[in-house]
Image (tube, rainbow, N blue to C red):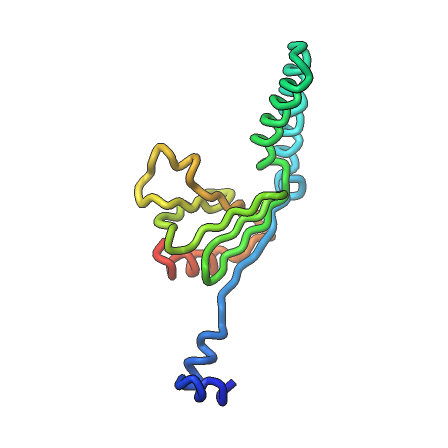
Length: 156
């Protein structure tokens, strides 16, 4: 490592400092971490789809409406993997991946069940559509001070 660093004109200590990367990764499973909420959401989805089917709409329309309901409620049913690294924040849920770079984030709001990251410095009426929520399980998530330090190092 020292030889490569000297070949690039770097001090060995500078090369080693660039190797250490702070990465925090955790998972959140609503069926494990909040089973009551997951069961209630599943019941609400079944009830709503049952109501749609009872309207005797054409099959395609009923299918589309039930798909929309399940899609909107899926955040409370599908496990999530979260990652904070040197480039930004990644949230993987089912078949969806959301990525935000640190330079695009202006504010972090700590909530009891997770962290809300947004691109606006002040609360905005579009925050519900533009924010990225990272659920943090109470016991299995990364340590709070480590996340706080990482967010603070990026000005959040």
